[in-house]
Image (cartoon, rainbow, N blue to C red):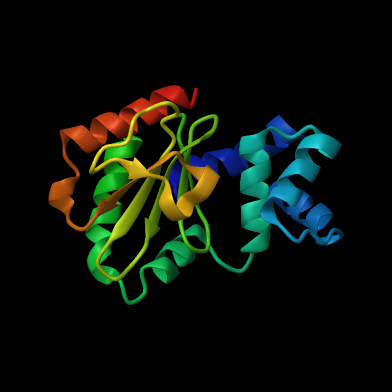
Length: 180
């Protein structure tokens, strides 16, 4: 399990008043059609911060899958993209210890106080990197969010490790800075 995610789970009782297992038990009594409904329930009814609520709901829905299982599943048949994913993750982790990496069924959210990056293996040959860069103009490379909708403001399509260059890392750093 990712160190930051494990730290978040370890801190959950102190920060939220309940352990992850206790939260899972509470969520099992509810039937939420959407992820956001579960998050909003925890925030409004239990005063849980967004980051913890998102993590609790994600891990509750994917209870039988570890974060590693979710990533392996995302890249099944797309294994050639794993080096790109790992290089991105390694570079992003260097930004600070306040980052939470949350694998989901089809993507991986990178969160500071808010999500600032979304990594999704879009095709067998391409990763779509979603960024939150409000008011940043688009370019040929830094396009609009496309299929990410409102989850991100921009998208960069990555097909090789070479594309993880200074320009891309500067955009990721900017998104990280804005997520505090």
